[in-house]
Length: 148
Length: 389
View 1 (cartoon, rainbow over the protein chains, first blue to last red):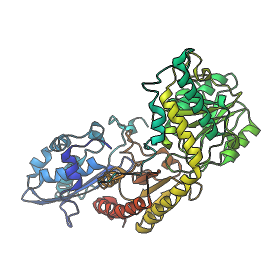
View 2: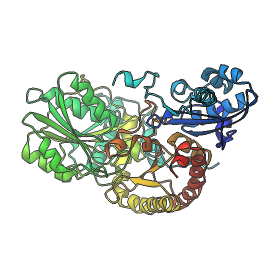
View 3: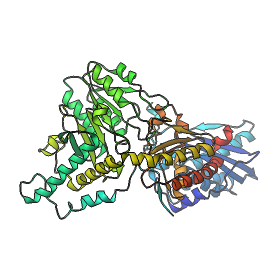
View 4: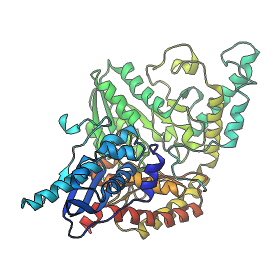
């Protein structure tokens, strides 16, 4: 098992905002079951702010902890501010992640951004954007599909 | 919290008898067994004794037993040693798709030097069909290397039949990777018809950093380490006498206790298997239902990922392993599960259990009680669970 920070362990064991939002305004889902991580983030938007946010994650300890952390970081924030939260910021808020986990399991902010994108697409009448499959990668984060 | 080891393939606790046999050779009897003088006497005697104990476990002759540094080294010695010694005869080898990485990566290295390989597919239980080995044999096949029992799914191969086919139809050598099976089921080299066999004493309560290698008289391999005369010139370098003394005792105990070990492990294995399959939906057992090691179980738990399951089990004092991509360190899910047809997404939820002498029926009960709430918790969190239920 990788060595996780206390904060990662705390979020893994007590994940915040687990679940779905019925009638969500935006949903972001990304990942690849072959790599072992799928994240789905639901947002409820009110006055251009994230009124509520929930997640469901299939994945390792880091995937669960980053999902939990991103929901905590953006709850109540304006969409603009939420879009500024990066994967790196999520990892930093968790006192870091093991290097091997930085690429594969640190996608929670991307999933959130996707949820915001989805919200905007729906609002613009372009409909939901659906699932995004991330490419498989090796231990250095190199995209395996490039070499296939 | 009480630590319960369900991951004996990673580490077993050395038996006190093993440690005791090793102790005097660190400081008191530190001599070199090759010395003519008195300092060499005790170590030389220990070396001979350990060789005898090891030979008895494998049913080998004394000069057919070679001490190495690991199971991986023994596998490499069999494969590369044969390749380099017999390349004038041919450059083709046969292995199964579910071999250990020390076999698969050794052949990968050799393929860069112009060697060719056939990888035999296995059925859904992980069994090699001896007929497939026969079909893969060629005039230039110099080695067939098959694992006796899988280190992931526990399936035991019909080595006797495979050896017979190899020897009747070719001049290839037969190497048996018994690194997982030795010490838990019979590994009689004569009965198996093995030309070479690798075993891993740390898997059966011996010291780590040790390996055992059987090389049948008359079988020609090139050493990987050239040097002096140690280990009949097949594995040179000053002998690690404390470790070798430990290997000897681990082998003696294994021979003596083999039947008792199975008798102890089978009810625990059964209790876990029945308990897990009986209390959880959409959990599947991998490996052969009957022809499997008494100390291994491998499950796939649908909709959740292995590492998070391992972390929760660890929280409850249960040490296990998984074949998921996240736990593999190379971020690829198990090639063994892939070879038996487990979907890569499902392989993420693999749970690998390996039992040992310290496990009890109470451990099994505890495991069966602790696992379902963890699975439930992680499934409730999983986007795949809702999507499919």
